[in-house]
Image (tube, rainbow, N blue to C red; front, top):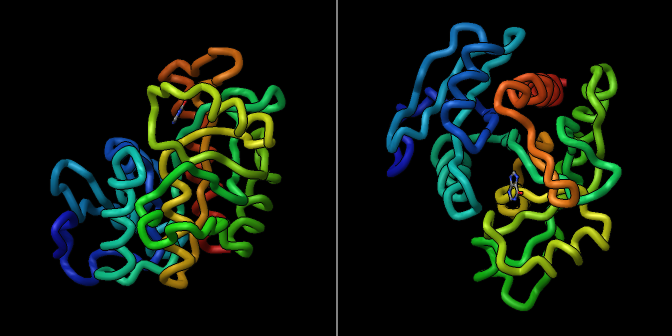
Length: 234
Ligand code: HPA
């Protein structure tokens, strides 16, 4: 047991999918895993362990934003021995070529700051995905009926942004979408030598103002979960 995860040693798999929303973790575990068992409910941040095609896998909520994500990822890696972390989340589209419902597989994650900024200081580290996982996710996405983009995303510290100029510069530099967790995942994966990948579904669009209704969010989310599971065990 750790401060934020009440599971016993061995109750969490080496491969962990991490949605922001704990209820998404429950839905994904019940929908896609066999023999799913709840292993955490500390602070309501639900976590489950089960199997996918015979492979042991956990799905643990991360909460919103990099500080929350970082707490769960640190404990999963350092205390529970996680070797593969895949974020499954949502993002806001930032390019005309990206539409709501599309899936983005994040090659890199830019940011203004992350919880790791205190150790990087003046150094602009380039947080990037694990190549083998990224390649496997792209292959899994290509065999599905879902529009997929591969490229850079932006991990923001704010949802209600008072600096629209930052979003404009990200769009100008080809960033596909904005979310709030991936950069710290890639920082931690690099630091601890584990595999990290962020896959996100476009739930709203900064340029068009469009937003996906709740009922349609689920189907797109399902495609992303299956892409993540196929990539993890490719
Ligand atoms: N901004 C930040 N995070 C997000 C967004 C957004 O527009 N949509 C989904 N996650």
